[in-house]
Amino acid sequence: MNSTARNIGLALGLTLAVGAASVAYSQPSRARAIDSRVAAMKTIQASMGAINAELKKPMPETAAVQKAAKTLAQTANDVENMFPAGSGAAVKPTRAKDEIWSNKAGFTAALSSFQVQTSKLNQAALSGDLEAVRAQVPRTAATCGGCHTPFRGPAPAAPAARPS
Ligand code: HEC
Image (cartoon, rainbow, N blue to C red; front, side, top):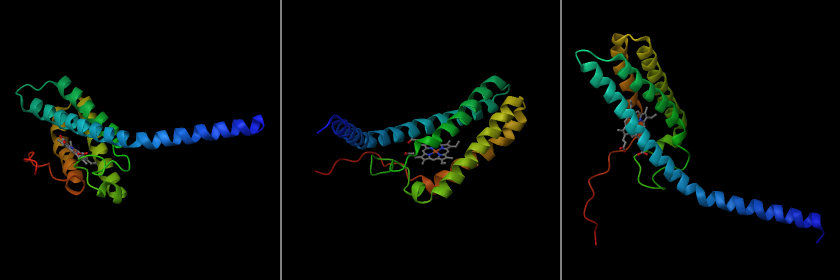
């Protein structure tokens, strides 16, 4: 074997090894995507909760509303990358339904209206007009259900005794 052929052989071997490694790592990375989006959803819920709680106060603090609205809008954008193909129930328990991937256009539409409404909420907060924020909250909250109803499965039941 001349050295060129050996180098090609080496390069090919390396490529195959890297290819095998990426296959081996894809399962854990899909599992991480599930963990990331569950954490992101918790942040999203906490941010909505913080905005609602602030608005209920007799003297709501604009800065507190702005902080939560910014987190909400940013997380709504970030979550877009947390639904890689194959990160469904085959990987680990998840409430993400297969329709997310089988009806990609529907999911993308639900996600983008969520992003639009959270962005409007953030803009309203930035303007300092808390009445505008108040009006935008239910429009934003509607987009949660707009995605959950078609694309999120039921919460897992409380852990039952394992059948023996
Ligand atoms: C584009 C779709 C989409 C939008 C919009 C969306 N969610 Fe979710 N949400 C999901 C999916 C899918 C899951 C299940 C994730 C999983 O288990 O892998 C989920 C899970 C959750 C969970 C459960 C997290 C856990 O502990 O398991 C909460 C809470 C939640 N979402 C709150 C919200 C709130 C509040 C909003 C709106 C402000 C919202 N979501 C908007 C798709 C969405």
